[in-house]
Length: 120
Image (cartoon, rainbow, N blue to C red; front, side):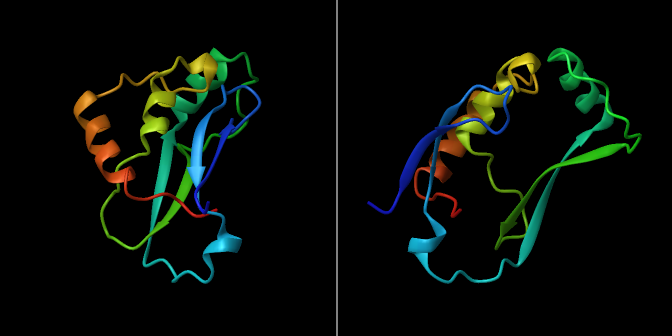
């Protein structure tokens, strides 16, 4: 099968969640992305998440931190992956952002991601 799955945690303090992707080596050449979607967290959010898991405060004073850079071919924000929405709804001490899950946005994300998967 081309589509792969695994339980993965992005960091040591996060709970592993089911992820799925197409292996780049099996997909072949991909077009160059037309756009980059930058995901930023405010300094306040970063400090709250660090405090919730008992981490040392960041020495950075930058007002924003880059969380993710997503390559894509459309000039609008794609739906967040459903598993990321669920992870974000977890408490900050488990790697979530503490943002409540919005059921309508979750369903829209499922509709989108049921037909696609990232390449990695």
